[in-house]
Length: 185
Image (cartoon, rainbow, N blue to C red; front, top):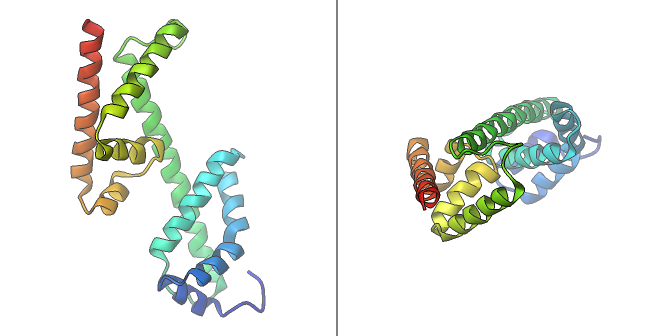
């Protein structure tokens, strides 16, 4: 952060109160720090680093509290960056495991299944996803495409994480049943 800018305790207080100009100041001052930290955690994967940067600033908006000074603010940003990066990798691991379980349960062998069959499965799944309700598609999108935690989805919808987990599990079970019925035909 540069000298001559507003008092950082005041900027952080304003940001905590929802002031978009204060957020812009924090964003401009901390962007490079967050990006470098994200790149370090991702081993230089720029797409993953940008995803982490975005989530860090969203978390800052939601959890900012008044800070004493620049040092405390930078420390807070550093901790949030680390936590978001860890959450990102946990979500990636969960997504990979889910995809692996789904493919194993349907006889998909990465190197053995012909491309035509894989393409047909993807087409079928796309159609099934489009036939879901908007709410069901939104839940799957938040969880698997964006990697949101059950807690963050629940917070967004005003529900407990267990309720979100149950809803997602029911949608996945529905898709699995439909897939098995399709395989039987």
